[in-house]
Amino acid sequence: MSNVIFEPSKFGAIELNNRIVMAPMTRSRAGDGDLPNDLHVDYYSQRASAGMIITEGTQPSADGKGYCRTPGIHTPEQVQAWRKVVDSVSANGGSMVMQLMHVGRVSSKYNKAPGSETVAPSAIQAKGQMYTDSHGMVDFDMPRALETDEIAGIIAEYKQATANALEAGFAGVELHATSGYLPAQFLSTGTNQRSDQYGGSVENRIRFVVEALTAMCEVAGADKVGIRICPGNPFNDLSDDNPEETFRELLTAIDSMGLAYLHVIRMPKKITGVDNLELAKAHFNGPRIFNDSYTFEKASQVLDNGDAQAISFGRYYVANPDLVEKFKSSTPLADFNHKTLYTPGAEGYSDY
Image (cartoon, rainbow, N blue to C red; front, side, top):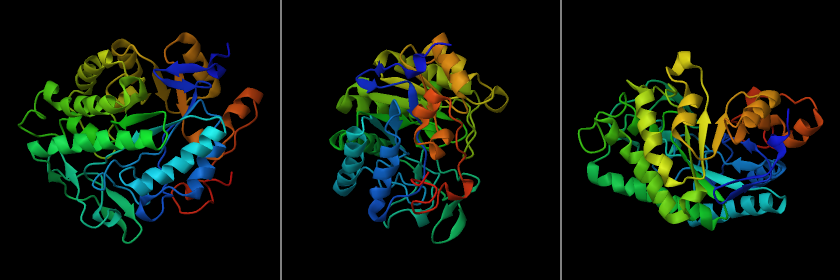
C-alpha cells in the first residue's frame, strides 16, 4: 500500500495538503441570527490538518433553512462570523470549502425566521418529522410550489451565497444536491411534478441543478465549485423512477464545466438501485471524492487504484480532530457520543 492518501493534491484551484477530507456534517451549534460562533472556531481549527474541510450545510437564504441552530451565509453578520472561522483554520494550515444547503420542503416553520417560508418544486409534503427547539418533534411543513418566475431568484440566492462565501475567505463552495434537499427535489420524479421547463423530462429535471452550478461558477470560477450527490438516496422521503438515468444525464451535462470536484456518497445498490461509484467514474472525468464508512485501509486502496482522488470522513472526524495524525501513526480511533451530536454547547463538539 502506498501513501497516496497523505500526498498533497489540487482540485481545480483548491489546494489540499493531503487526500483526507472532512465531510460536511450538520452539528446544530449556530447562535442567534444563525451565526457561527467561537465554538465553530475551535471545532474547525482543531481539524485543520484535514486536506480539505467541507463545512456543515449552510443555508443560502432564510427560506433555505430547515434544521434548528444551522448557520447561514446570507447576511453581512454571517459573513463576518464565518471569516473568523476561516482565518483560524488558515492560521493552522487548513483549507475550507463551504457547502451550500437549501433544504426546500425538509423544514419546519418553528426552525425558521419570521417571514420566511418553505418552498419546493411541487406542493408535496415530505413524510416524516424533524426536531425543533420550541415544539419538539413536528411534521415537515407543507411546502409551497415555486412559480416558474421565482426559480431565477433561488438561483440568484446560490450565486450571492457563493460570493459571500468567497468574501468570508473560503477556498471554494459545494452544492449540496442529495439527502432530499431542494436540488434533489428538482431532480427526482417523486418530488417534482412540474409541467414547466423544470419538470417532466430528465432534461428538464436536471435544469435547476445545472443552472445553480452555472451561477455559482460565474462568481467563483468552475475550478472553485464542487457538487455532492448520492444517486438513489431515499433520505427525507425522496424517490425517483430512474435514478441511474437522472444522474447519468446530470453528470454528462456538468462533466464539461470543469468543476473542482464531484463528491459522491456511496450507498448499497440494494437501497439505491444504482452503483453510485461506478456511475461517477463512468460519467465524471474531474477529481472525485468518495464518502461514507471507509476505513483507512480501504480509503488508501481506492486512492491507489485511482478510482477517487480523495476520501471524505464524517463520523471519524466527530471524535478524532487529529484524524490525519492518527492515520499516520496507526493510533486507535476514539468513538463519539451519539447523544451530543446535535446538542448545544461544547460537549461532544469541541471537547474531544
